[in-house]
Amino acid sequence: MMADTRAPLVDAHFHTWRRDHPLTDEAWHAPPTEAPVEDVIEILDRHGVIFGVVAAASIFGEYNDYVRQAIRRHKRLRATAVLSPRTDIHKLEQMKADGFVGARLMWVFSEKVPEIDGGDYRLFLRRLADLDWHVHLVDKPERLDNAIKAVERSGTRLVIDHMGDLQVPDGINNPAFKAILAAIDRGNTWVKVSCRFRFKPPHAADAFAEQLLRVGGGDRILWGSDWPFAAFEHEMTYEKALADYYRLVPDAERRRRIDETALRFYFT
Image 1 (spheres, rainbow, N blue to C red):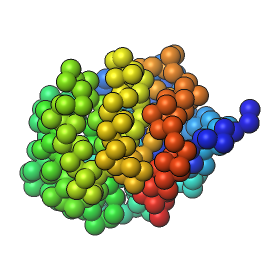
Image 2: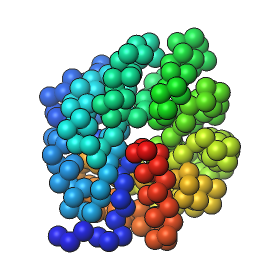
Image 3: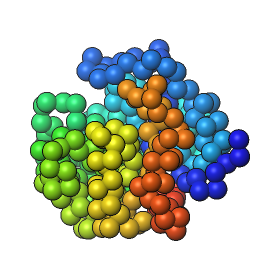
Image 4: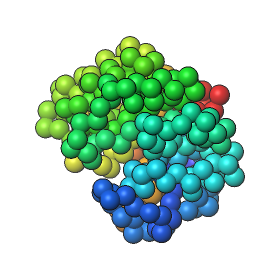
């Protein structure tokens, strides 16, 4: 198959795992299929995507070992990790040397309000800022504004997944989405225009993307496929993910700018 010349240079969000990886007690999903790094590399190559960023899978908690091996072996990859806020600075420094670039705070599945203003997180976020890492945040709509502001106070760069992943009846008028737009405008937040397929119905994502592109242009926007499409493994394909991206961002010049943003953010 010939690579699609419209394809992005950077896929900034996908996962890689083996089915025998240890799930956490709170895991929301048990993968029905393997997603080894060799498959990721083949898919990227087939579609003309040069660089990739592995998003930490919350279902495996702090088991970052397999991803660590993958990014050490494939220098075209970077990754985020799920970590305890008490993670030692020496471990963080080694992970940075291995190719990790951020910590993923996957709080959306937790009913407990994280103590992001507590001492452990103040220390953790400052260490991430000192390492020039970013926070990769997914939280409930009603908590998102407070979480964004806590990360901003630390000086750490912030990335928000999947247009906020806001399954809310008021759509772009929801306070959480307005908080995301305001954070982009303040200049230290980036948002992934991705996962149209997770919205119900999918076309509900289009208005979110339009507003994000209006505020963020190409300089605060990233894209990721979300392969292997957890909970949608038998419905989605990489080709469909690319088609959704072209639908949300039809302008080739803007996609080029999004690529440039991803290259600066993850690879420089």
